[in-house]
Image (tube, rainbow, N blue to C red; front, side, top):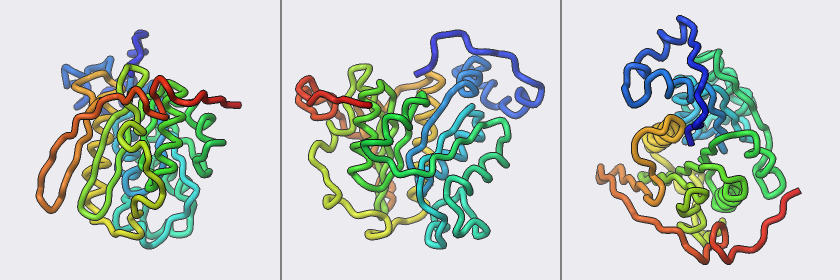
Length: 265
């Protein structure tokens, strides 16, 4: 998703020092770092997956991070949601995360959206951002986010975890790839349990969240191979990674040629 327009390469001495390890990478360099500074990324969910994603994007110098979450920090969150600490219990998640991310990198603009994502709010939320990460824990929200990204032509990086397993993929139907509904065309709320229902090993969210942050940084800078058309699956108990191939479904209700007309207001 890297912008073909030449980015601003005017870095302050502090920026050059802070991001020197990025700039040393020939695949990233000053141009890649400038693209990160210009990027606007929206995170759906500031929980177990959103925490490491937000921290690594802020540390990497992403210019604007939007956080969508209507929940408050709870004691049960601290087992895996590493952007929070005990002093934040009872605070809104977007407010608490804003505090932590700003302390990590004051040059990153953090925008909190203390709302639920639904068919009414999704399009407006996504409109102001270049790329979307979905770390929500239910299929209706994931499908709503996917549909909005398809309509807006925005790249979606989507992660999910349960118990000892995780998965990750990048969806770019605007470039001919599949969308999330191509992977799960008929899933409903009843088809999967949340972490609160099934349990989750805390570090699993860290692994998948960190991998997601890496894929987002790759998409912004234009380096490496995208996960488009592939689903990464990780089993912590087996210590194994594998990939599933995923093709665009021409009859997909989200991105296929026969999908219903979408109208937004």
